[in-house]
Image (tube, rainbow, N blue to C red):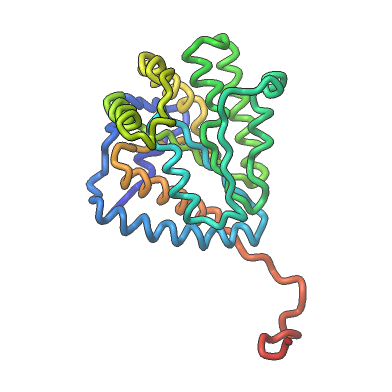
Length: 272
């Protein structure tokens, strides 16, 4: 089985063309192959996270953006269930509070980035300020353009402080989203997830795709790349995301810290 994550990465200053990407693509990988590989990925991620946490020298920020019902929650649940919770955190960003609105748009974001040795997952993020804000014209074109620059500066700052940034857009079709909305209504235990307001946002689908395209074109960099993940086959989504996270951690190459004592003076069979 061969998987090349580069096929999903948006190269710097290139068009993402999200609407033209197959949302159910599997690149010739079967479900059985993906499930087997994903299991290995999770095992490797746990071991790498252990080293990252112990070394406390680098950190990893994973950003998840998508249209509603694309699977952000389940993707986060799958990843975090295979991590040590001591070094793993999740931050969810909804409508800004009055206090947050009284500061610059990155103020609430910066407070949640991971400390050295930790992994943090963002359920939505600073990109809301160039996605929903852009779609609804809550900010001028000049402000949005400045925010692209601010985001790149912010993510470069994180990179310079040894925080690797990974950004995933979970890509689905409007037809798939509608089927998930109907499922939320058909299953009583899922009713709480249905928001009537989401139906209004569906009418702006093409606007959102344009906003995603623009955000990724301006803000997919070598330091903080964007990946577009076909997400209608959830087994492939989990495989692709876990493969990229594993690949990234391996490139970060975390190391265990050197002991601050002379190990020759202590042997396990001599201490009591």
